[in-house]
Amino acid sequence: MSLNNTWNLSLSRTLLLMVPFDLLASLGMDVYLPAVPEMASVFSTSPGAVQLTLSLYMLMLGCGQLVFGPLSDRLGRRPVLLGGNLLFVVSSIALVYVSTIEGFVFWRVCQGAGGAASLVATFATVRDVYGHRREAATIYALLGGMLAFVPALGPVIGALLIGWAGWQSVFWALALAATLAGFHAVKSWPETRSDVTGIGVKTAFLQVVQSGGFWLYTLAFSVAMGAFFVYFSSAPRMLIGKLGYSPIVFSLLFSTVALVMIVMSRFAGRIVSRFGTSGTLRLGMVAIGSGALLMLVAQMLSFSGAASLLIPMFVVAVGISCTCAVSANGALAAFQDIAGTAVALYYCIEALLVCIVGTLVVTLLPGDTLWPLIVFCGGGAVVVLAGMFFVRR
Image (cartoon, rainbow, N blue to C red; front, top):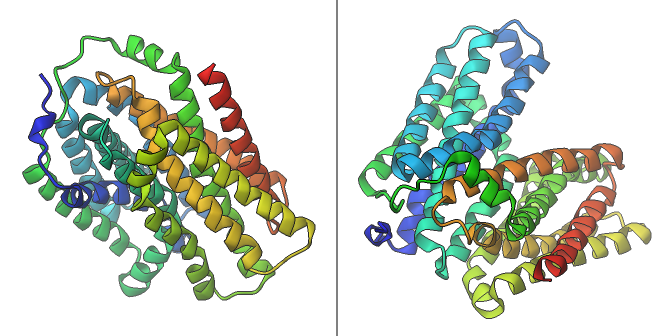
């Protein structure tokens, strides 16, 4: 018997309950980046060793879901969410008091595991409760946009906290915020998992990876997240390094793209109602591809102002929002009984594709030009649109 009728929260209360877990998992990734040089001195190690903890957290955040996704199918969403949140809180506090780099690495991995558990339980709950409802588009668009934008905002927040009270304040802030989110969840987050599935983990994984629809929508989500990753990687070199904007002006200009994504998330439900899931995905890919085409024109005509980057990125941001609104539902549609496993694979594959392909594009192409964005956004949109044709056939 489904337990989804126990979820009687309004959309606004649902977002208030879920958004903190999405934010904290993303913020934990690189919020202490400005303190890396200082922390290297504190632990008597190299900045590279401290930098490694950023990569390990990201790896655990993506791959850890492969463990916690199937676990949420077995035990339920609520225990995995609350257990992951508790691990995140304990790890954040431990990071304040740790005295060796080895201990710091260990607790960062644990913190990433806690974030992975909370994240997979959150998105599996959305699938349980809102799988075929209009509100799903709004929730997925907003949470997906935050996953893209918050890692870019994290270092700014970290810099303010570090300047105010030192690098330890970053982890105290994460612990406090996670504690408040956890208490709210204990009170308001019911179990949404239906009867426990008897499907084994191996069988569940095979069911998911053999689905053409799953791969199509997961690839589309990877293109959307990767577009923002490449933008995040290229924008500082263009706006600060090449055009000479100050860090503050850069931050304001940079955030306008995220603002477009957040505003668009409010219209996601209407767009999906009008165009349907596949139609909205097509619209998203056309927008991302059109943004790449505008950048290509700007690059070929040697336009070099901020507008040559930002105006096309506004179009890409519309595409990102449309894609995020339907990609999770499209990928997970056939996996009601094993939503946790499907969510885990969805995010793990996306993280790997974005890290590998996005990093290659940024590394191999001139970083102070529009070419990384042109290649990634244009190429990704073409691949997904072609994939829609073959999957439909």
